[in-house]
Image 1 (cartoon, rainbow, N blue to C red):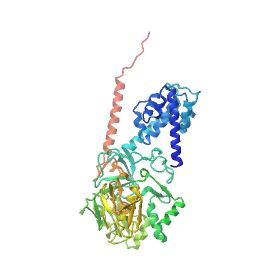
Image 2 (tube, helix red, strand yellow):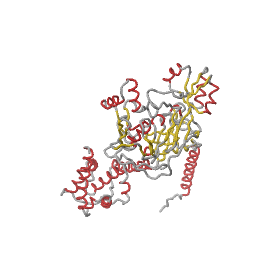
Image 3 (cartoon, one colour):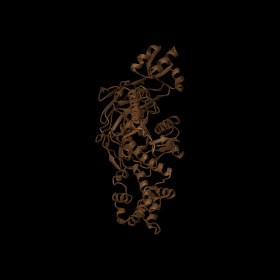
Image 4 (cartoon, rainbow, N blue to C red):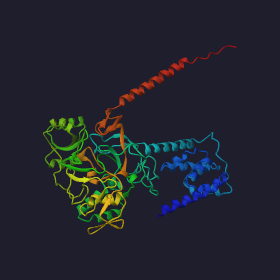
Length: 551
């Protein structure tokens, strides 16, 4: 138990002690303050608020705001209604509530009548607080706004697509970190490294029932599994790959690199709920056997169903650059950034593009030659950037596996050769201790030859297969990392193309986007506005004009 936990326990104790005396002053039995849940019902009765507020109080994050409101309202019942008193009540409740209860000078006056000349700041503050509570409830349990930050799902979801993600599809997760600044995820808007939450309280994983479970080919939003530790130097590169790269480049053990980063305070550690949100397509579910041969994906021995706009990378040689660029922009084909051009030219090509088979046929007439950017069988990166990030597994992005996706209740035999496939699952995702002594494995202090998984896992990949940081590089996605499903694109704006009206107001499904309903929405707004305008004019004409009569 650290100092934060001691502080929280003491503050809770002094709050309950204060409630004991305030309850007595309000005409209730003091012992009721020490009965969990019931004490909140009595508190609500004293401040004359509806009993069903108890449900809001019990919701993590929302409950924090509700508790602040109840403390201020209780202070009002003892005549402490000025702004300074309310700020102190909120900031130092563990001192203020005992003061209200034990001070002989403070009397219970009851709920004050509605203020007639309420200060505008107080009025707006109360309205704003309830708006925050309402928005937090929606954001936590139903829908959350999300923007596509990278091109890994290019072809289906584009950079600059603004989505609504349904938390109800797979069941909303109960927030594990309740002390969070509203409308932030893991960092403050003004900084990429300053966290926007306090991890003093961390609740166990809980999820509400959903409309279904993750299925093959679902597009899924999830907490990035390797996002539990972030390198401050570059949030877009995983800490684990930074360690592997540094160890390879400097020919030193990974443990030495980790210790150096810890010593230099270069790391941020996030709980699961606060890991960055990613969006990919689920290509394999728990229990599936997955393999990739020459960039073709196989699930359970059969060629997997490909998304409509599945993309791969292609090297091209071009003689008429102007015509090529016009065609590339016309068909919205992604090109490798300028900093990679020199390396591409050294290989004898002019450009590296990412496009679907359909778009490849459209742009091919503008190219002199086209070659797929495919890794050969056995091609191996010494930086160990492909899962399971071990020299024994010489896999790459186009030739991978076979591998079985862990399933809850599934048991695997442990060996030195297979351990890299399961080690992170056992240690990190399922919270066990794991030691190896020669060929022997010690799990939670006991010898083990097998391991049984405690939850389901998924394999997620981007539709832009040659430009996607996905499960091929960092492995399985645990069930407790799943956030929701994208269901609606309400805005779309590209860096080069600007607004994309054909994508605005579209629904998201496994197959891609529906047709746009933007013009239907505009037409509806115009019709409603016009109807209200002419209706108000008609009502004005129908009102009889009063005339003055002479006496």
